[in-house]
Image (tube, rainbow, N blue to C red; front, side, top):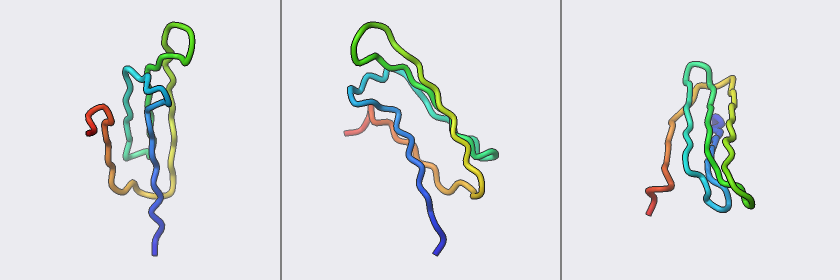
Length: 72
């Protein structure tokens, strides 16, 4: 039975402060990049973290994206 690893990228924080963000998947290179705009736990302003993850050795299977802002 072949392995079927799952990669989950969650763009939320505990206080649900994200006001912007996105994820992109490059099927040719296996790279996942993303960003978001969040409010701090205390203080004022916002911060903008970014991430990049490279995966090698397997073809991507199915891709599923969900937007929790429209979930019931």
